Length: 370
Image 1 (spheres, helix red, strand yellow):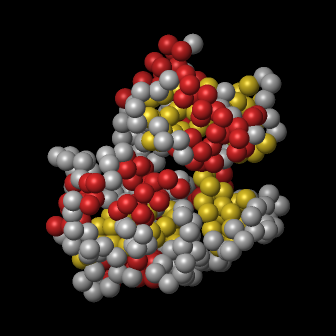
Image 2 (image 1 turned 90 degrees about the vertical axis):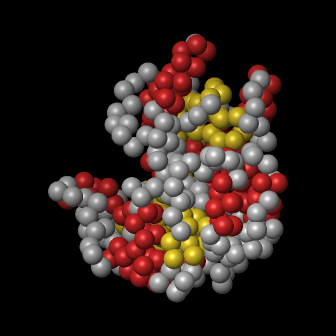
């Protein structure tokens, strides 16, 4: 992705200032990878605003499971950026670990990279933040130089939501005909006007840039995320629109099903994919990472949760229990790789994969089950 020297730094500083209230001397830490956009975003934004970056290195749970909370306490971190996946993992270690440390310096948590599920959001807010520290939800991308949607200290928040678009972003949710949807309806997250920080293109691939973001609707940026606004105007990201499944004639995003699966107390995280089926057209396959060993009864319970909320046709046809899911270095689950492993196909480029051993585990479990 090609950016300009002005756009990326200014957009990073703008979002950091208005979203997380970083100013001169503010201590901010974001548990991220310097190779992902949040690394440069953190450095540019804090330098421009005069903030202090507290740099974290190594595994978040080594040498002890409370390392994140210890780090935040020792360095008097004020803004702590942390991913939903990491929060789900930390929640399994127990509620007492954060309470061992003085976290009174914290003014806000911030989060980006993937949609939230209610259970980990509430755990972070209630058990770690004592129901007083806001969670600033943030969603955008490298090509945005920051966010499309973001919380802040001034507007009310709801679990897993965004109260508003970022300043300078003319965000809208459109249907398949390019028309704004009613509140409560799901559609494509789009941007109608230019913003500072807009990507100038893909390096030496101008046609792919146009095809990716500008080919759907005239003069409108289509970001590739499903979104929805509730009746109060709060925004929700529901997953990637290019991951959408069509099961028994119904369109469903994997994140919707994954959120239901992880609502079960035995499930830490999950990935849902679609594969060809003669009857439904597409059938849903789920992979779950458990907090403890699973049983056949647990599979039935998980199917029942999805069936109750979404209807029996959308319950997963197969549920596999695995120890890990393939993820990028910034903790995004790679559904493309999960699907390829299940289908016995070539998963393609795995250079961004943090844990390639997860691919072989999925292959073995599926093969043994069949």
